Length: 175
Image 1 (cartoon, one colour):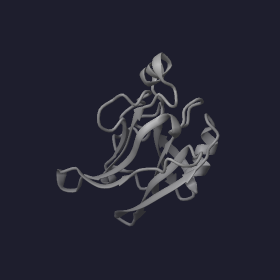
Image 2: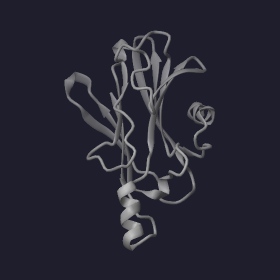
Image 3: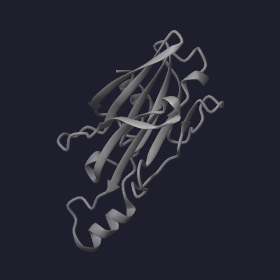
Image 4: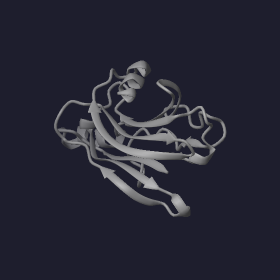
């Protein structure tokens, strides 16, 4: 399974040279997968942590800082059969986490969920957040271990986190 976040840089309400400069600079949104052991967050994939378990079972594609990439700008790939047993759930969150970034400064924001069962990757959900509101975070989905299988729940839960505060991001993810 994979979760992807895509967005395009925006000039905001600026035109002319300022608008061109803002579009070129882009905006930094972040995709983070929070790995839970029961009720406790114990690892995360995203920002500067690309393979938090060290076995390739949860891998982040890397921090895209402008939104200028084609397709999904950031992706987390999960191979559930390799996730260690102590991990009981994984919560996927997209946020305008770094200071100065916001969903409002990005265009065409999209959160996608892909199923790779059987070797073929197929999009199963595409969430487009509302253009209204001042939220800067979205809990996209949660994968929950149920014995030997994992169940996926689409959350699409919006909220606000203090930018740059990892504790706030983790508390938001936990709901």
